[in-house]
Length: 225
Image 1 (spheres, rainbow, N blue to C red):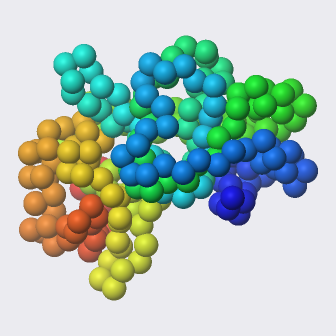
Image 2 (spheres, rainbow, N blue to C red; image 1 turned 60 degrees about the horizontal axis):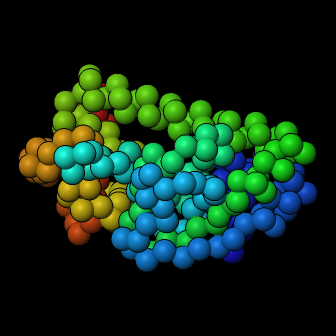
C-alpha cells in the first residue's frame, strides 16, 4: 500500500504517527479496472474508501435513465463516508474512471477508532464540510452560470487536482468521455461540445483523447466567473 499518498491526504495529514498507524492497520486494499463499480446506488454501505491511485466518479441515475455525475475524485480523497453516520442505502454509484487502487475501512473499525481518537473525528468532519461546500458551489453554478462558464470552471477544478505541466500549457488527463463531462456540468453533450469548440477556436485549450491541454489559463479562469 502506498502509505505516503494517504499520509498527505487532508484527513491524515495532521494526525500523529501513532494515530495514523492505528488507522492504516485496519485498511484493506482493492484494485478496480476501469468501468467497474465498488458499490451501486441503493446498496447497503458498511465501508468508506480512500483513493490511493486512479480516479473514481460518483453518479446518480434518474428514473428515466438520465445520469448525473456528482463528482470526480482522485488520490488522497475519500468517499462512501455517509454510510458511517446514516445506515440508509448508498445514494450514488462509485465507478472507476481509470485503473484504480482503493483502501477500504470497515465502519465498525472506524467507529471504534473515533471513540478513542477524537482528533480523527475532527478531521473527518472537515472532510465532510469540504464535500458539502463543493456541492453547494455546484448547485449555485447550475443556477447562476451558463454552460460555457460551468465547463470552464469544471476544467479548472480538474486542472487543480489532476493537471501537470506540458510544453505549451497544462495537461489535464481527466479520462472522461464527452458524455461524462456533460454529466459533470449538468448539460447536454451537444452544448458542452459547442463550448469546448469555442474555447479551442479562441486558443484557450487543445482537445486530446480523454484530456485537454489548457493553453490560456487566465482567459479560461475569467470565463468561469
